[in-house]
Length: 84
Image (tube, rainbow, N blue to C red; front, side, top):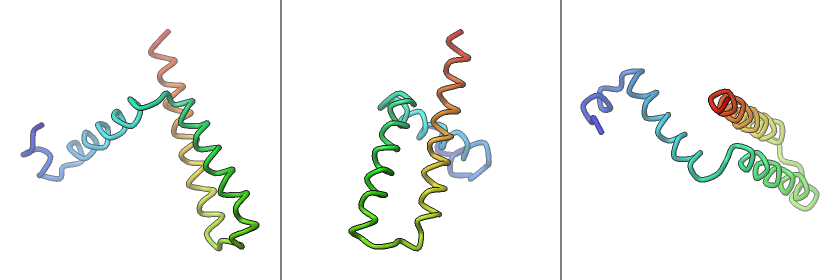
């Protein structure tokens, strides 16, 4: 790893670092599996709301969930483009 470029904090090095993290994350499971797991996690969260009481951050949590689902769906679409 080029630590000099990474330590400079340039936008390119930041993008490269993020890209490596995403690559590592996606090497664990396919994007569709991540989406399924996100639905399971969010579904469990929603079911628990009755017992836990109303969370004032529920709408923010939904937006985060939605953005993550959209992210993995876009990754899956891009992967399909490269396979064809």
